[in-house]
Amino acid sequence: MNLVTVIFIIATLLSTILATVSFWLPQMTPDHEKLSPYECGFDPLGTARLPFSLRFFLVAILFLLFDLEIALLLPLPWGDQLASPLLTFLWATAVLALLTLGLIYEWLQGGLEWAE
Image 1: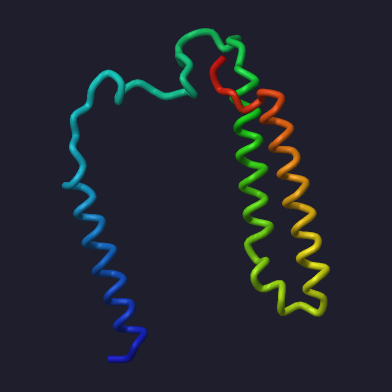
Image 2: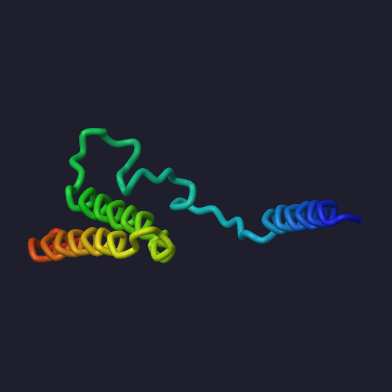
């Protein structure tokens, strides 16, 4: 047998085994909390005009910002193979410094305090 056939057989067997185990493994003990729909901590049957906490959105935006930072800086180890690696690392340092200053500012303003 060639390599492609062996890989296809292994992938098929592994996915079949994992799919069958996943039906028997979880414990099915439904209760009131598991059966209720989850809508960000709000009652889904109540009014839709409840005010949202701005701190929740601030933390979510900060999470997205730093997640994007990681995605932008991920290829940085390969930056030394470019024509001008010093310029690449200078820009990366500038981005990190700007984000660090923003984080310090939010910290000092109390924007990261979840509960008062």
